[in-house]
Length: 542
Image 1 (cartoon, rainbow, N blue to C red):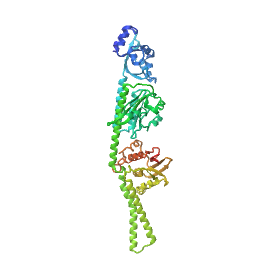
Image 2: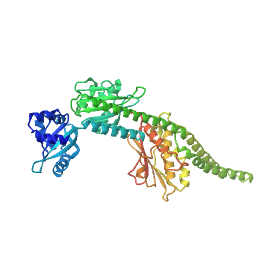
Image 3: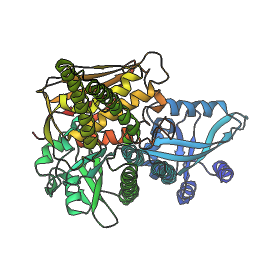
Image 4: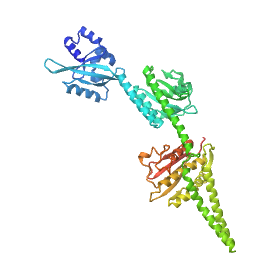
């Protein structure tokens, strides 16, 4: 094609009526490019591709159409001058008159003057923007599907979907929201929005005047707001969304297989805009991917719940390790009781009873029995599920004491120093006491196991009371968790122990318990030792 056009160039002058007619009949962009990148002449198709009249386009030039970062234009400028005897075939990016970036397939053929010097190039330009977008869309879809297949965290997968939308639609700002059981919007992903926007929307109730996302979730259908200043769906949110410069927006609900609303996907624009068929097609792709991701996560949650129930009715894998430990805890006071009972029997037979010594031995027996009672009471309590217990004000001191009854002797008898902060008896926590004991016991058991191969062995329990929260730290003399494992240790069924000593559920269940208490359990990576922090609100209700 370029050879034919090159020959036509010598037969027909640029300005000839017949040549112009012929060039304009060709359904492909044609341009004569000077060595400095300016256009000597273009046909009407190239002007149409770029959004300019032909005369206007000749005044601008090829290099000036390229993005303003300069690198792309500079690269092309060098190629025009440094390859005088070569055809140039490549892709070029230009900016359309209306601002969007256009991808062109470009084939430039050198044209020489009668003297043999390079005169200019004749080029064929084809708009391949749609093809490039579709290639990019397929690649991004495969990345999202890979995230889903690898069961990556849902928020990471949703962020990929938002990235897909924003890269495919130039100038758009996208958000994904999930709908919770109370009918409120919960942030899924909004990486391009400021934190103030995220905070304002997260937790907002859906409704007919709750913005495009809230209305789409409420009605279960796509809401298109062509003009934010006029459309009814914004209600009290109108001035707020306008403060972020948004003029048009449309939101699409994501539906489950049974028709319930799982979440919403939005496209927001800073100018008045009509949605295109490509916009809707892009959102439809995003909603399908989002539906796959959410339903996969829900299925995974159900599987996890069943797996947890299989491990233990109390949902604490640490209970599997308790049997030997509790036997050891009870064995010590039983030995004391048995010893004093034998001594009393000997004194009775020898008729050598002494009131003071009998009272001392009876007190020791009573103390041992009381300790066994506490251990059994604690064991019965901590072996329960506790998930359906009501939240009650409970002394944190009592929780710690009853938990430590389960493991203190085992820890101390293995040469591990145990330090516990003094906790005022009136420091209370509105909680499910059984579950908080389970979390603390799991952390202590983990520390105990981790310290077996160390020379320096200690465990410290620290408590800090704040106005509205209580922080409990369990720190041991270990050197911390290796960085590659930090994100994995909280995942269900991940364990660094052998199969006889761990199922990998303890920490993940402990995290779930902390979350159910509106708190969190995290690894303190700033601590030089191994430190887990349990942070809980003092009250569950305002």
